[in-house]
Length: 435
Image 1 (cartoon, rainbow, N blue to C red):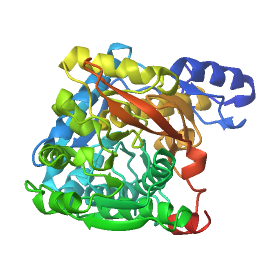
Image 2 (cartoon, one colour):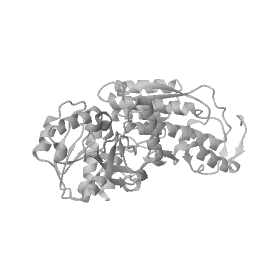
Image 3 (tube, helix red, strand yellow):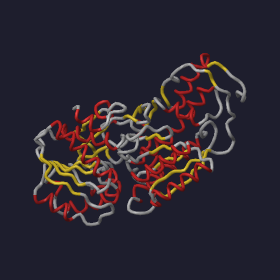
């Protein structure tokens, strides 16, 4: 092992970087030849990681699954030697405590020497933790939260995200709807009344109306988060059924809406596009409606829906089977982002260590190694752009029951990342205006 004050030129170790990359799981050699800094001994104590997800409240249904995914992945990494020989000690944080308390918790965790915080879903919570991470210089890997403001208002140094940004998702959804229903004339949206719901509706419709200006928006419903009665929105859709209904509701809200909409045969009257569909399929199972368009845009996840094998990464199926084997149910779509977030951290650390010639890397070295890195994920080979945005295909398919525990997704639409993810520095409005 290299000692603290030993130096070497990376030129002689370039082959080592490629070999280590192939073994570790990331793809490609380090980007350039550099002079390696003195190595740091790998600490003997465990790596400390906090995972933030909803464990109580209206979003606890997907949150608990995500927490289970985090535990599964950490156990898997630890069983296979940890990260550079170090085990992970996992601390669970309930996201339901809200942005103010998460700010306090994040500050405390970084102050206590936590190596990373992973997780977070809610937009306000995401913004609170990104501010803490950037202020104190702590690594934050967001596995699902997709605030429109995060990664757009300003660049981040210490924050990454292993799922597609909200506005990228909405752009992809617009393309997918037009491809799946090219003769669409009327459309409605029913989205939760906060930034996620309003932003995705705005930009999905923006794409559709830019490319097909004659499409009429006949209804937009904005139920509150945690609603238990969707009767007003269902009545409006039943009275004047649009060709397409687009919804990014999630968690218990989506489940409740589907159960109530089925009573009025809405799914026979309009083509529904549910981005967060697996969050309803997992608990509803065979009661999930047929001929509903199911999305996997969030992180390339295909949980509960069998997309054609040629479109699904091997790790996607492997992770599903591991989750089912351990917990007896299919994972929510969000769980795939959770899995990939932990492995992104692992691969970035291992790559940074290889670049520096061994030992445990500094946080700036981990960040530099992560930027531009490609690695095998549950969404296939994922490339991390220099602005810390992950790029992956968006998939949509129509649900069909086959009598098996998993629903088939047919008539699949694929939207590649180069089609819906703008170049760094291009705003969503600029991108749509250029279509």
